[in-house]
Image 1 (cartoon, rainbow, N blue to C red):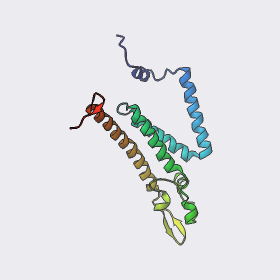
Image 2: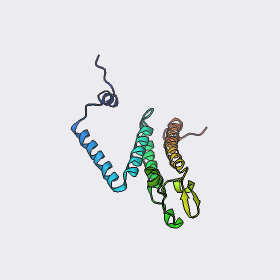
Image 3: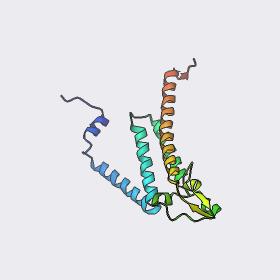
Image 4: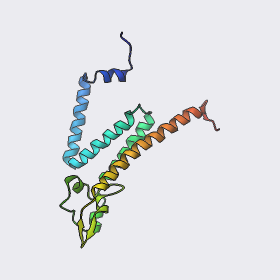
Amino acid sequence: MNSRRPKGQRLLSRWHEFSLWAVFVLIAIAAGFFCVVSKRGYVDGITILLAIIVLAGAVQLPRHVHLTTAALLTLLTGMLLWANLRPTGWQGEIGLATPTELDPITKAMFWRGWPLSPCVLCLVHGMKFHPGREQWALVFDGVFFVVAIFGARVVCERCIRWRKKNTVGGTITTG
């Protein structure tokens, strides 16, 4: 019973059988990841890795997406990563030091993040930060990131399906 399965199904059924080319690609990806981590820090590296996992999940699950959708999701992931990892400049404007009693992830992301930065939720009394609920800004940013990626996927795929359904002979029909 040797039925011909599509190439993707054959690859998934034999996930442990990699070609030499695939091994080199995986090594290059791992080297690039650790290069980014060594230059930017482990918090940025983990954030980028999680964003790539969310992007891969949005593109692969529950079924593959069109190439246009994949390109749009990749651009959206890049823009959201840039917005969350770039320095905002608020530390210079506010003129206060980062609280020392924060956990390492919140401390590294204290002045960064979009649409919320942990410094926005931190209370200030007597020209000093008093931490307490900053982690919720990071949770909100993460939830916003996932919702934005999966929402863009749904909208883009529905627009493509609508266009295919309403296109006759190269022109879009109305009604």
